[in-house]
Each structure stands twice: as structure tokens, then as C-alpha cells.
Amino acid sequence: MLDQEMLNKIAAGNGFIAALDQSGGSTPKALKGYGIEEGAWSNDEEMFGLIHQMRSRIITSPVFTGEKVIGAILFERTMDGVADGKPVPAVLKERGVVPFIKIDKGLEAEENGVQLMKPMPELDVLLKRAKGLGVFGTKERSVINLANREGIAAIVKQQFEVGQQVLAAGLVPIIEPEVNIKSPERAEADQILLEELLKTLDAMTGDDKVMLKLSIPTKPGLFDPLVDHPRVLRVVALSGGYSRPDACAELAKNHGMIASFSRALLEDLRHQMSDAEFNQSLGGAIEEIYTASTNKAV
Image 1: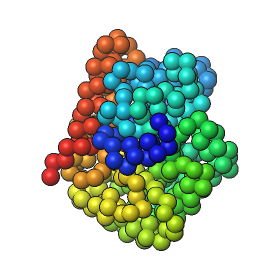
Image 2: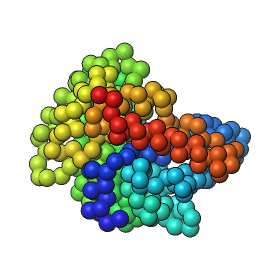
Image 3: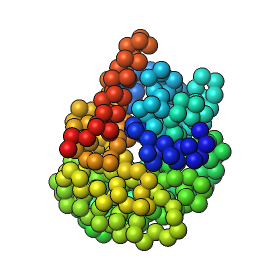
């Protein structure tokens, strides 16, 4: 796919974005969920090798195609790796799936009810490499735990500063200010985040567009103004700890939002499955998430 084809697919394609970007800290948990216990590796290289095998199995499955999966977010090591003897981004594009790369390096300690992103001193180098591999966009995550306007404003400011750096490198940023779904102030945080995002989007100059990856709001339809905003290419939803049935039920209440699920996509997959069992399980998950992304309940 050429850049324009990828842009069109992300802007208007029917389907969802798979999040295959578990990083170093969350890899042991992801492997355990896949049926591989911690004793199965002796160092980080072996651990990352096992998670790459899992991701390669997903990406090369006959059910993982651009018909229902319009994009996939990759961990940096996955982007740099190979599947079926080819660079992973190339394999995705051959299947009609638009590749993205997770660029954040984790979270700072909580301050003002939020966790900002850690510094990314090597970001320009990573963006150049990603662009060279045919990657379309990036994803960068920070977390909102409380309805603190000062903290939420700081998160949005940082996210859009990084987003401008991404846009300057010729890539499209997925801005992800995640509201913790266990927050006691979740509804208020959703509302403040909406206001701060709209303020920042309205102030953008030029004609660049960004994507947004948000927690599913407590109030269905709350983020409709973001879905409709001329500066927003697409609004995608994270599962945020919901099980797949619950995440899909909540997502289906929100017009214009499509899924970008990680755990909710992978939760039933196991290392011990035969290929037939694996493909059947993955296909069922893809169908369920696709339906919630494209067939809305209201």
C-alpha cells in the first residue's frame, strides 16, 4: 500500500486497529496470558523472541487481513523483526493492514493526578527508521488517573508536542491520553479531557490531522465532537482492562469510534493451540471486535 492508500484505509476503512505493542514491562504478563510461564526464558532476548513468535503467528494467520483489521500497532522490536522471511511492516501491508509503531518509553510517576510520558531522546532516529520501513503512524500513551485539569492539560500539551514531531517526520500520530477506567473521577476526567482536546485541536495550524486513542467514555457519545473534528483522522478506543465482551458492548454505544484493542483481542489465544484452534479463536475475536466497531447499538 502507498501512503495515500493507507491514509484512505485509516480514514474510511471498515474495521479496527489491532494493538500488538506490549512493551518490555508488560511482556511477561502477555506471555503468561498466552500460556507461557516466566520460567520459559532465561534472559530478555529469549523473552522478546517468544513474544515475537506470538505476534508473528497472529500477523501471518489467514484470518488476520485488511478485510476487518485495518491497522496494527507494533512494538519497536516487532517492527524491526521479520515474519515469513520479510520485514513485519511489509507483511502487514501485503495483507492490507496499515502498520503503526509504539514510540513512548513508558510513564513518569504520577503528578497532579496524571502520568506523563518519559523523555524520548532518540525519537527522531526511531521515526526515520519507521518511515523507511513503510510505517504509516505512531502511538504514544500517557495516563489520567484523576479529574485534575492542570494535570490533564499538561498531558494534552505533551501529547501534541510529540505529535507535531511525528507529523514533521511524515508520520501520523495516534495521541493516547488514557483515562483509567478504575478512576473514582472517571466521568469528570472524560469531560475535562474532551474540553482540553477540543481546545488544542481548534488551535492547530496548517492542515495536518492526528488520530486519538481514548478510553471508552462513561457517557455514550461524549466524544462525538472529536469524531467529527476536521483535525481528527480517526478516533479509536482502547479496552482499558475490560474483558472483550464488555469492551465490545461499551464500544458499540459510541458512533464513529472503532476499536484498538490489545488484551481484549488476545485474551483467548494460547501457545498450546493447534494452528486450526488458534486461527478459529483469533477469527472469532476479530469478528466480535469488528462488529462492535462497525455495527453500532444506537
